[in-house]
Amino acid sequence: MPWASGGSYSHAYSNAWVGVGLGNSYTYPLVQGGSESDSGCGPSLGGPCTPWAWIEVWPWEAYERQISQLSSIGGDLLFVHVRFTHDAKTNDGRMLWHVVDMTKSIDLHFGETIHGTMPDGHAEFIAERPTVNGSLPPLADFGFVDFEAAQASAPTTGWKGVGNLYHYWYWMQGSTGHLLASPGAIDSTGYSFSVNWYGHN
Image 1 (cartoon, rainbow, N blue to C red):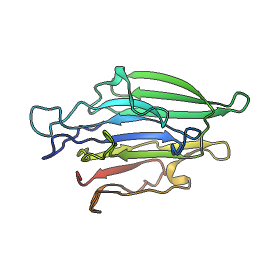
Image 2: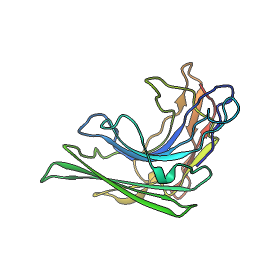
Image 3: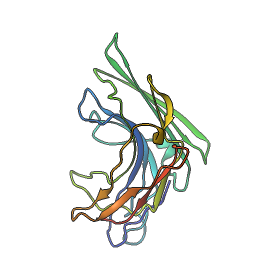
């Protein structure tokens, strides 16, 4: 995962994650997992913080849950698989995460059940400027993030690369409308793309 810098800002933040769901309600939450690359931890202004991995169920959980075994993943290749199913008999949503630091060979599984939740049919692959204390901080300069083997599965489609499914994308813009980050084109296989950083705020 990338190291990040804040330039002239003392603190800046960035996330890269995959998830299932849009998180529009407690019934249809967003089940997500990924990494955070921030700045403001080094000896100088805007110095890099050590990237770390996390999981979260939004809006049920207000904050990311840091994965203690993956608290230092700078430069590592991270695999994240999120599974979210619904048990109609019990009305339970069942969330499973498979997170692997491919560089360090750390293979982890996590699970959670939340009654009354279900998937909404969306999968996401996101580079994000996370909200901190209710506001949007500067976006840390992460350079670029590669999403490889980006795919999703549904009962009607089976496993397909994101480029071979109906999809849409957004450019990240600052408060004045200038570009902060944007995804590049999905490659010819339909499975891989990059997100590039362009500005802090």
